[in-house]
Length: 345
Image 1: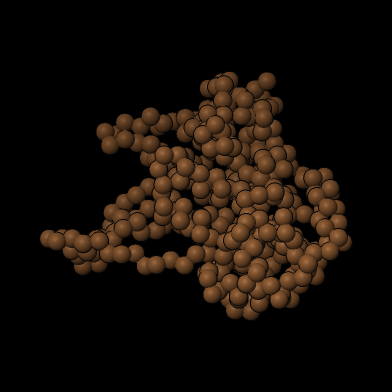
Image 2: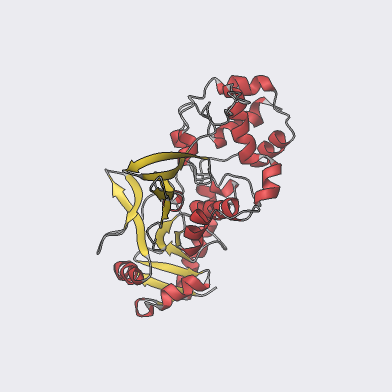
């Protein structure tokens, strides 16, 4: 793997250079402490001291609401070509979110069909991760093979060295991006690699949250959790769907048709949540998961059961910790795994 460094003062110039080929997106501060991914403004400052963005960069590649097709006219309807999209260059993706994007690519493109509306964005984008050497209090990626550093699954992996960044090229696309602005980079020194090695050795001891992932996969896969427990836990669930919307691997959506003008109709896709009562309701009115306990059980079965691990290559949690901070009923994946460990043995 080729490695170079770039001074933080030169990073804006590198991001500017990428505009020739990409629409550049980077983390931006909102309010006193929150961070979101947004269009990188010319000469903008990039924060480095954040844990994670409020929403995962999934929202850029699989948007919360998007038009799938547009039809004009009723007597002789014709399709309206969608506007051409520029590929994204996303700087500052945390390792957990980059791992989640690989999961989404497999979900949307490698199970016998290709939803190329999503996969095209995923595969054309330039993924520039920012490795974590100081995890947040809700993070548990170390338990989920989601980080905090990656060996693959990125185009460029950046590591914060203080006044500079170590850049590791993980794909020909990443190598080409750095090559297009090679004057801004310098060869990595042994001292730079030693700093990264110290981060790697230290970061594992800094996680405050752990999860019993192996126990959860086993007990859920073998259906060993008593129904009474699912009903007991479901009483704590508000059914808000917040955990689904902030999760970087969740892919539930619904599709609807709307009129967007005179003789103009759109088919829209928007995020949905498996915890909503109407998500599995059939056209006949029958709902196989009317009870909240059944919906909760289904959500965690889909996330953790080995049947899905076989299909997707991994379980559906990358340990980003967003559900921990979002859930009002303490039914995030990490806490529920602890409940399984403590209450079901």
